[in-house]
Length: 97
Image (cartoon, rainbow, N blue to C red; front, top):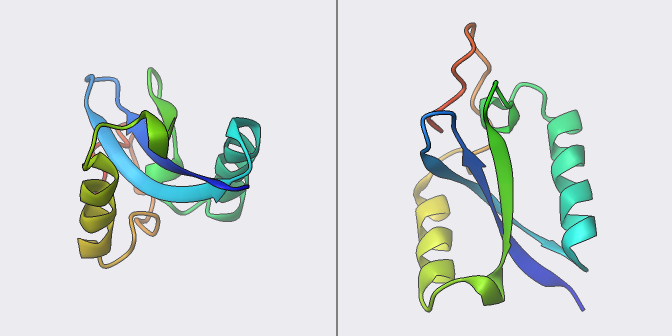
């Protein structure tokens, strides 16, 4: 049975930014999905990691009550879904645009 996950990016300044949500059969498959997103969307600035940056994948049941709904509402308000920001020059790929 598939589980739902939120993908966050942690920036070198310590900020955490919501990137997107995904479904997967488990954490290993969720990690594979992130790798595929990065491979298939190299123009997506939010999927590019700079020095000291990393991703965090959180399963829905690990979230506080209401946190999933809040994240989905936040993503729904983004016109590009969070993945389509073009990579511009420089090493600072945060914050999420």
